[in-house]
Image 1 (cartoon, rainbow, N blue to C red):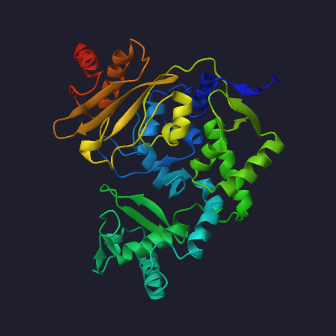
Image 2: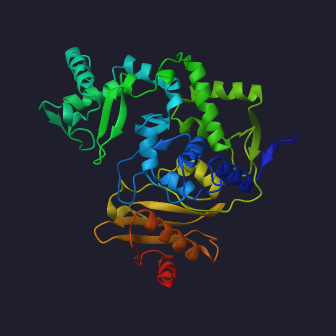
Image 3: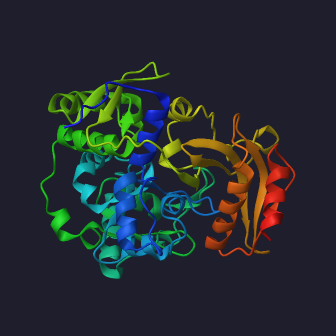
Length: 403
């Protein structure tokens, strides 16, 4: 067996991370459910987010790795038998492989013990029972379907949450109901858990908290390839006290190998099955919610790329734009673009484009080609580049040259 390295250069760590995330996998034409399954095994998590200025967050990491695909693949995987994924609180609200459900019960027990995040829950147990009974009778339903006109409040990010919606959210967090799907307006459709989770998964023994922590850290380590404790902690949003014992167990078993990484002060851990490719030939736009850029310190250490999401920053204080996507070329992040899908005019609008220091001469040409592919996938007929950013002029020339 080939000896595994005990130290890694920044470039090696970067290539390992990208390989673990699926950027070495050949693209299928067209992508199939098999392609989807392979991609999900790489990322392990697809973060769900409602922002739709370009494309909803859970669709983008699949596109970045698989290329243009039919988004109905994800809907089928989430809503049709055999159900392959389910939504739960993983990194945040996210799709995860359905077989992971038993390993998330420790989190459900935590929410049950603290009675969720709504102070009223528990003061009216009859309301919980009523909601469950109505779901049992109606089947998969939105809060709006079940709502009987109870008062609403706008205390949480302006959401118009009824009492029914709050009860459903609590029942979801504790695992009594599950997400059966979403409407075209992105509203959650809830149903009884036993009608969402496959029986063979639902009947599995509940792991101990320590066993569940170990499995989550193991999956995070595979998806990262190489990582620090902080990286592993962030992937499934765990507490460091849950992660450190799991890391120690995986090191002892030989599944994780301690390594030092150039430019990293924290100790690193290489998964024993991680590929160490000589090169990565990727070309991809990464969602702000892509696992490659989730943990900001990791992103800076791997790519020398300082990145912040500015969606919630007032417009006059934004540096790069509202919905900014890093552009991955080869093994490096070489640019960033602020994108908007103008569905009324059928245009993919580049609100701003910036090159990173040391970006290769072909950056604008490669990015313009990728934007054309993205526009086609989104059903948009053209690409328009606005003049903001040091890459905009060259990118606009490249886009016009492709018309």
